[in-house]
Amino acid sequence: MRRDHLVRRTLAATVLSFSVALATPAVATAAPTYPAPAASATVSPSTVKPGKVVTFSARGFAPNETIKVTQQYTNWRATTVTTKRAGAGGTIKITVTFKKLGTVKLYAKGARKGRTVSATVRVVK
Image 1 (tube, rainbow, N blue to C red):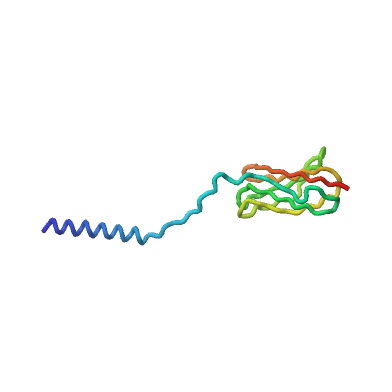
Image 2 (image 1 turned 30 degrees about the horizontal axis):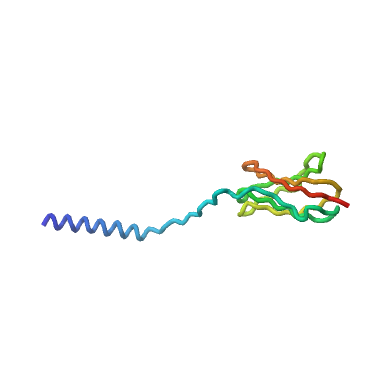
């Protein structure tokens, strides 16, 4: 009799723990992307006339990271163009218009880790 009672208790405990395991929802987690996307920047077009619009795109930043965009003509100090938050994919896209002739480097620098990317534009007659 004792043995039957012990078997029933063990069986009941096993069924109960199995039921709890089935009733517990699984937690879904997003797998991180490895390796992290390479940081890069592009301009389009890369050669323009004064007053024309250039699209500057940069990627490789953290989602929602604050990005400072600066421009620097050859032999001039850098000036801030804008500050913008990266999108969910860690990218930004802005348009810039240049008035002076010359070679201009556009930089995008992330506020969290200081990651910096750049692209060059030529402004010609």
